[in-house]
Length: 356
Ligand SMILES: *Cc1c(COP(=O)(O)O)cnc(C)c1O
Image 1 (spheres, rainbow, N blue to C red):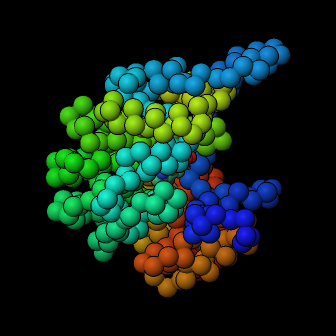
Image 2: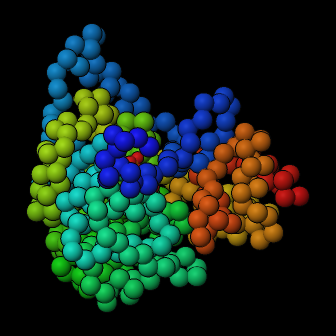
């Protein structure tokens, strides 16, 4: 605290990202990164962009990242005018709060969800109301259908639960809220969910957000995008062009295009993660853990007799890090990223020792 701080800064409660410790030989299952490297085409594209002397880095990148918008539009069968790209989906989300969710009524999101949402509300002065998940941690769509609101946002599958809401439930919300933007944050949808992008041509109040950080192994590059009606995209462009004209650098643009175009590699990685998730779920269940059904690249689990914080600590002593949230309703759960088969085996071996 200092006398130089503005009132806005004094009142902020910033988001706390999962740690990125600088420890060798760590099994890092705490921030939902992909265990596989990005497509080999990504490295080739970056090398081609750099050329022999990297002279091109002298020049600003394309402020509109048109090549990337075209690649996203092609992959998802929409027009480039329906695509917004940003520096990670966190930045895309920030612009959404500013451009489309700041109204007189409070916005709605679940009580257990991505903890960045209340942070953006604090930053932009957006009122919000949280609606409790059901006892099985599912979202009840009817809760979002009968109350006036300034917008709705939730991840699908939800984070940190991993539970998926079917598309017909999302459609029910869209129909019940024709005057609110419904934002579906699909950071994890590629691991077995069905994207709501297929609905954007029918609902002008739908915005779907994706990231290349998880399913396309590019967390280090910071690329995300939103797909929706051209008028919603235009709102985001207005905010972006009032904030930072060049959110994506040259290397990020070519890397993201290459990743979007390598469908075969993408599908292969997603399938491998899903197969490992199913094995991990079965093994943890055998060890006495309860595991919520996950459609993400992480699982959310608890042990009926073991304190979650102590389990996390014991794992850490064995150089394995997972995520524990000290929050109401979920403080006895651990969120564990699906790693490689080898990493998951090391995890279950450690948990067998710890709980045995
Ligand atoms: C990881 C994550 C994001 C942010 O992704 P970036 O593109 O890396 O900023 C957004 N929403 C949810 C629900 C996430 O889990």
